[in-house]
Image 1 (cartoon, rainbow, N blue to C red):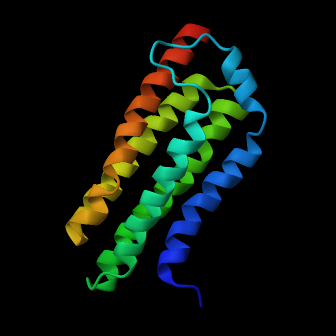
Image 2 (image 1 turned 180 degrees about the vertical axis):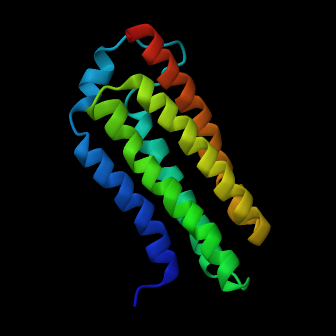
Image 3 (image 1 turned 30 degrees about the vertical axis):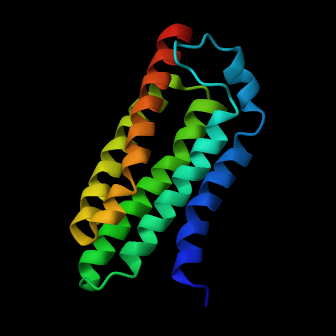
Length: 154
């Protein structure tokens, strides 16, 4: 059996990697769109997402290994799993389908799910919840970019 830390780190990286593979080639389309102010160069996205996936994985491993009752742990990890699934869908909506408005609404759902997971994680292990703060901040920035792309290219 694999250690919890390896599974915790590997799962979000695998989810992100699969989404990246399914949207391969779409960065050229994204680059051709009218970009809002503060839009970073395309190389920033895989770097930031890799870091965020590692932070998510570390947070989930801390929860998995915590000594809280199983029901509390499962509730928090279910929220985490749902947000990870929601995270997987967003690049398909935005990059693959080009549905910028739908992607923006989906991103708001993702943000709400991450905030709920962060709260649940903090109640179990504050460090685990705090590891999701950069993710929330990036999602807020991503929401700005998504909304602006929708507005400028819609």
